[in-house]
Image (cartoon, rainbow, N blue to C red; front, side, top):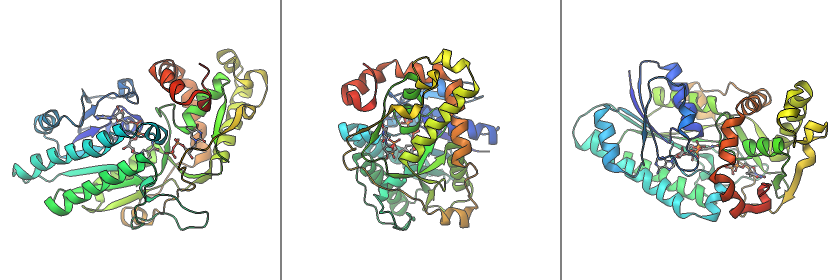
Length: 369
Ligand code: NAD
Ligand code: TYD
């Protein structure tokens, strides 16, 4: 049995991970720590049994130290971060504060608790990172491996790269038992509607524009969030201490392909369920028109990475990981989740996020203000 401290547990991947871990490991203790920034939502953890939710900041070392001691934490899974590239372009400071200084605060507490206090207890600090630390690929370049040199391009990617280096240094210098995973673009339930897939679903249902950055030919490797959670579990159980593992979905798709898939799936859903037209009267699909008519081309994201691709040979060969959820089927499931959980995303989009996105993007995000 393990006692986990999960940071960023009320965010998209953190909440899916807590749900996954509780189902797979019903006897383990789980403490869910989250500062509930704009991206955090305690309701993401609703219905999960026996999770201690703590509203707090990873930079609060006294709080984290108390949680580690009181709950006899042996495994820390670190998701908490500022995670949206567009926000990092507008305001990088909070990315440094949370992703760099926050990760360092956690490392200091973990070192004191597991090493300096001399408990000798087996432990694991698992750091969740991104493929964006490797930079961008040309069309014919080989996919990112764990030895691809770091070349982060956005302030977000640079802050994650810095945190990866700190995690590595705490292993090599102090002997902290760490692992890191670098994953590709996740999709699935509870994703905050500022990222491509949930934003475009919500905009399409409201009849708002679908803003395509640049030519829409940027390529991402799409990973269903449950596959990501399973990959992290395999790293925790069987991964070698001090190592990094890339986790991918094995589905490289151009943004326009994803967007066209999304538009076609919404048209199909409306054709099958006449109630959707009554629920979302502003959607073009409610009048039998194509959702794709909402697509607009907008200015490209500054420094927009052209292509990410994951070579997952290491995690496959060493740990037996393979993604189990293909994009076509699991995008359709994801759309069904957003249709069935309208109140979840509507409450977010009607709240402070709406004024933030209007201030920062105006027409680019297609939000009518
Ligand atoms: P998210 O933005 O949905 O959630 C982040 C969570 O961290 C939020 O609940 C927020 O309240 C919390 N948080 C932020 N600052 C905090 C602080 N100082 N103290 C405590 N909690 C704080 O992000 P996500 O998409 O779930 O991403 C989780 C992790 O996975 C991040 O580290 C991110 O870099 C990484 N990642 C995400 C993706 C993706 O596609 N979403 C891809 C690769 C890597
Ligand atoms: P995003 O979901 O922000 O993830 P990331 O930047 O971490 O890859 O964006 C995914 C892709 O979609 C990326 O190439 C940018 C593009 N994109 C748009 O074209 N329009 C949008 O409104 C958003 C949010 C993203």
